[in-house]
Amino acid sequence: MPELPDVEVYLRALGERIVGQTLARIRVASPFVLRSFDPPLRAAEGKTVRGLERLGKRLVWALDDELFLVIHLMIAGRLKWLAPGAAVPKKLGLAAFDFPAATLLLTEASKKKRASIHLVRGRAALAEHDPGGIEPFGASLDEFAAALRRENHTLKRTLTDPHVFSGIGNAYSDEILHRARLSPVTWTSRLDDGEVARLHQATLAVLGEWLERLDRERAGGFPEKVTAFRTEMAVHGRYKLPCPTCGSPVQRIVRGESEMNYCPTCQTGGKLLADRALSRLLHGDWPKTLEEMDEMKQASGLKLRAPADPPAAEEAPKRRAKGKSERLILFAHGAGAPSTSPWMEAWVARLATLGKVVRFDYPYIAAGKKLPDPQEVLVEAHRAALAKAMLGHRGPIVLAGKSLGGRMGCQLALEAPVAALVCLGYPLVSQSGKMRDEVLVALRTPILFVQGERDALCPLDKLEAVRRRMQAPSEVHVIGDGDHSLETSKAWLKRKRLSQDAVDARALAAIAAFLDRHAR
Ligand SMILES: [Zn+2]
Image (cartoon, rainbow, N blue to C red; front, top):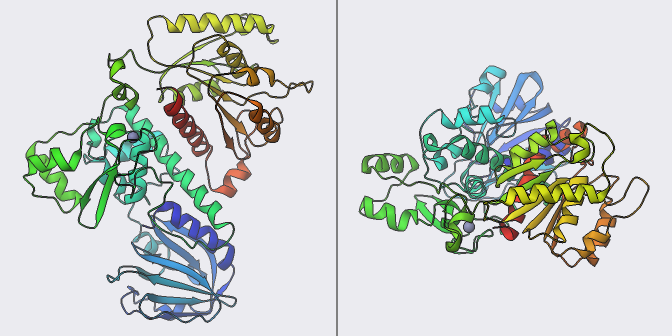
């Protein structure tokens, strides 16, 4: 702590303030904070900040003359943006960086002084500070899987290992594992491909959501409340509080200075890791480090597995029959492309992490025509696909659809016993300007709208007005800058330091949370 999202937000705030500015003076108040000698720190004075970078959890300032200032905040290090010449507080203050218009203060609210400053010259010297973990935001699924499986350790240890992944610490690893519904003590070698894909998506989603949330919170200002404990977190620091997904009290395992938080229902098949299984096997001989814990578990032959099924199957005893309680998602295509289009394929892969996905083509597409069939024909085909998918199926059913497919799903939901609706870009306004709100107002089925912010077919204010008239529970996940296909512009992604993958992962996370509430 601070981890990737917090460090990124610090970087954004600093980027707005110090890039292009001259670092006039550095006042070092604590002798331990400066860990490098050559070049001397004085060499940085009078230099201009040319750019900012992040190396894992370290902040890097690129200065003139190939000089790089590396600041590692460790656990308790914080930055404060103050009036020029601000005094360095006695106990907490480590150093002050004086710019013409303001002073940046580095503090550390801990007796153990661990935060550090290094000044290095040249890229090669800078590279020595890179622990080498892959950047979770830039990593493809293959790269992510390769890093994860390079060595066999527990998931918690692997996620927080800076040599494996960059910038993930105790807090966000708890959140990521909860989102992925995986046990912190599962061995990386035991994960199947589906679980690895789920973990990849969860990593992108959790880090992306927090980055945006923290950036929104600072509202253009300098980040002030930088903490690992936040009420919006699902499990981290939430011991005994209800899990937001299932309501079970969150559990923890304390090791030395850090703790693991997890939901037994969502993540460990109901097993209490520390209090029962581990303590019995380890006879109360508690491991102090993750490494030690790994070794002790290996020595004891202890096997703690994550549930093979999603918690939906674990939760309801009446649906215990394995394989039959799985959620079914009938996924309908949009007006312009078949169920096998690349866009559909990508969304099928994402939705497959939430249940069994079944798709079909409307008759006009199957016949190779461009113009959609009349509504009755579309609904009839949708009904037939649903009937076929329902054969032998006993779990909850979700109708999902892109645009036209979502709208037909709504029509079908008026008569069919489905648990929930997911519309990816609901076409609220027709090309001719007609409002398609009637079916929404008549609905009784919970519905989630995943909507692009600049989707001309669904202005968000119009959707809000319709939602106020709806009787069915409804939720909206807005994709900033998203178009009717939920795609964002390159410029926007660059500005937000996001990838389209991360945007999609966030939408998927919203769908997962919605389905956990309404279709389990
Ligand atoms: Zn839970």
